[in-house]
Image (cartoon, rainbow, N blue to C red; front, side, top):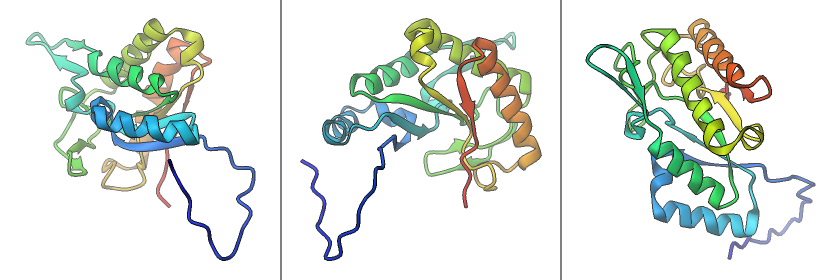
Length: 197
């Protein structure tokens, strides 16, 4: 049971509705203990959305480059984490990042788990990755369900540690990702960025 400490001065909390909760990285959502914690939180607080970093991190194994240079996509970890979220009553708030190694232009990292923060070598490939991902989600979970989710392009690109390429390149990254999402269906919700400060 979650308990709140009573304060000497009582202040009205207001009519706030809990909308979202965040965890560290996508890969952590494959852990049984984390899902049990989220299940416990949901039993009392009933958040609607779950947000996290590292959707396209290399540990998620979403893309590989074949010897002929073509890209191949796989979604087994994505499906597991999405199933896990939905099983505890949370909808995805997908933060579209990190840059997977096959697409990355440099080895620039943030966080101890090495989130690649470089821009893509080819922005068309970045757009293709986003399109294939969102298309897969619609195929697996249905358009009506996915229309209730959120897609956010990157995280805090105004911080050099998260996006060293600068804001003009972020706007380009955003354009390619947003167009890819809307190409799947114009009613899907895409936005961003969350910014620091």
